[in-house]
Length: 497
Image 1 (tube, helix red, strand yellow):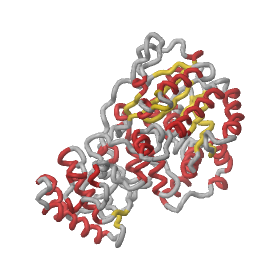
Image 2 (cartoon, rainbow, N blue to C red):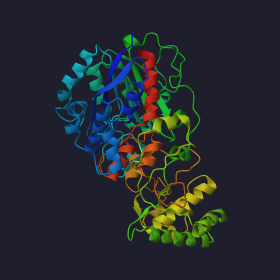
Image 3 (cartoon, rainbow, N blue to C red):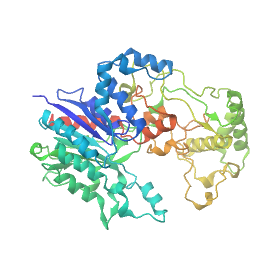
Image 4 (cartoon, one colour):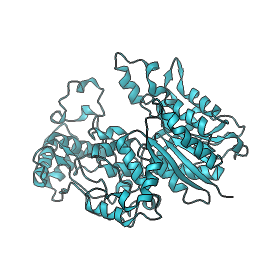
């Protein structure tokens, strides 16, 4: 008999895991629906609440598309659809997990979910990863008063385990950064402690890898087998994350040994394939932000690059073509184009919404004139050589005025996303300056828009991120790719549905 599972989503961010699991739950005889999402960030909570509201409809209401087209903010949903908005408010809770009193406040909700569903619940989420990430560990080394064992973020996974103990779900999925595999605290590796704690929680769980065969002898998989390469699973991004699937022991007796739950690697999806159909845009200028001024600035930068004897001939040729071009972009914010003929079918079906007639969040940042030249040079170099240039390969007139530029610590400061392969990992750093996320077209001289980053993360095109643009970037960078989550959700239902 088909089951109906309630999902509890912890550390939910803008809802990447929840979006994927919700969509997987709508295509199976067994259903999955989010009952509770918990997140601390104000703007991510707004995003979650709006999406939870929209999911209460079989088709999103016309008022949503009208609001998107008008671009003047959302209507008062509580007045228009009070029952649906109340459902969304009940589903999404703003809490700082691990803070005093929060667990006690959630305990009633967890008990109700477990008892009303007779154990048919699923726990998902990814505890914050700054303490485990390689970048975070590098930053921490530079802090004179940093003590590893005193960093509470190392132990936030225990709050996940604590909720797992209380909820005792049929299954759970926990996501974290690759750095968790090598992170150490109190003289030992953290990852094996995490696995031990998850395995022993509640009624006990069998921990399964997703991209490697299930061990035939019932043993725990090798630690590195919990690593998922998103680019192997239809996501246009080289995002490597630890994802642990746990099945409650009373349900794990007849698991198919030797089965790889996510199947074999899929063909790679490139940046160009992922962002096709989005309008070409110019960046902004920090001063005198007008199209003709921008174009003149771009041509002046191109002339300098084309005339430089230290720049490779192929890069100089691209710059010279930009000097002569009569088709430089003029718009900073997209019109509607929408053609996706170059996109793989699985993503076309995933992204598109026939009722959506506007590109959401597809507007550009402003940049200083020298950054236009740096972005143009980096994009042209990447087109020629298939990789972004190191800072030492930039001509002197494009070198940034940084005291420590010669230290080597910022060798990759300007990184273009190559058009013909998956992007590098989209992280929350994209909210800061965009230097690591340069658009592959040398004519556009800009960083990626929020929508382009969201495409690389596989958020559907009708997914609206609340808050100012910086916060939108931050939400996108912190998310789990929804299309990857969708595949995990389908695989999970195949085991326990």
